[in-house]
Image (cartoon, rainbow, N blue to C red; front, side):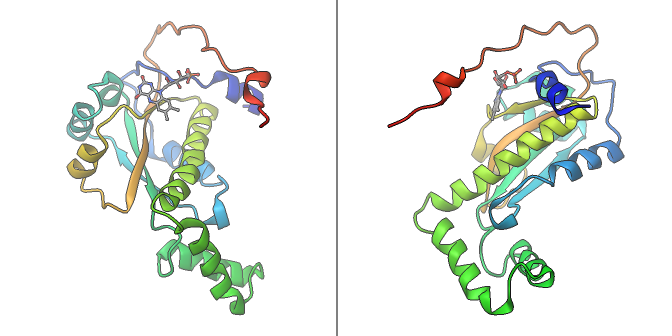
Length: 209
Ligand SMILES: Cc1cc2nc3c(=O)[nH]c(=O)nc-3n(C[C@H](O)[C@H](O)[C@H](O)COP(=O)(O)O)c2cc1C
């Protein structure tokens, strides 16, 4: 599917067909495609919990404003943003460092500079690590939605949920912030979509101060 088609075809779909599953291979392709998302220093501070079971989706639905799509979609992703994903010793940080050295992007003697740069950007106030985790993971979330569209699937992002309730109910460690839940599946047969939502114009988007 061409990019232009993907970007116009994607809609937040409220009603999914509970009878149509998504196979693991397709879901993994979506995740692998989304993994190409760029991130600060390539730190990729995102993780996913994949919910497929009826019971766990019902548990999540009860904490997500009872939105029917949480139970109806065959797959619901809890998208996780790792606030620690810049720290020395973090497995992804260390793997990233090794890769950068192996490919020549960094020299071993630049390690202190690299760790110091990440610290100065993501640890300078109490919100910096959250901003780091959330912005990068937000891009990843968008990639997941476009990838789902490209594979002929529908999706629905949600921030209508009880953040702390979800964290507790699913034993999510507190280094994670949850930017969104993402329902993925096929739309309900014969579902009539509302017309596309309005968008800000270029003039409304571009500002100067
Ligand atoms: C981060 C995020 C959170 C959202 N949360 C909800 C939600 O909890 N419930 C809901 O019905 N829609 C939710 N939406 C869907 C938006 O309302 C929808 O994307 C927007 O109105 C534009 O419509 P479109 O996606 O069909 O173009 C959310 C969208 C985003 C990006």
